[in-house]
Image (cartoon, rainbow, N blue to C red; front, top):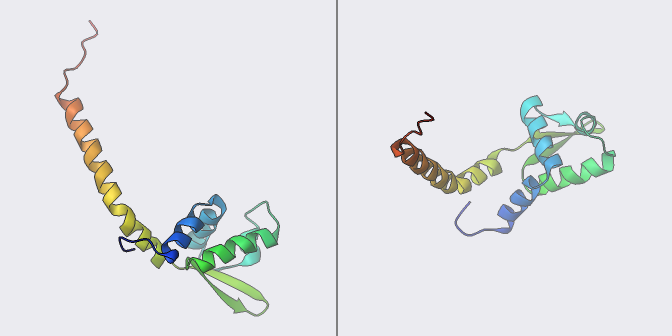
Length: 115
């Protein structure tokens, strides 16, 4: 992701904002490509609702769809996640430096002697 947000970036972040969609991505990461019904079995929702989530993920480029006979099989496309990680990296570095500073401060503080 470049410094300027694009519509594609916004679609990825919007897709990741939903817990169901994040769980679908986890299932695909851990279990590999899966048909819609196998994914639907993990959720307490109707299949059309899950299909809407899959559509959002597909439009964001996070999953790819392939027809195998009468089934639609989905697989994870991780490239947009690498772009998110690249975008988040400066914030990770910021918080790491902040926590290091806090740790240094705590190390310099005298220990309280309870006696």
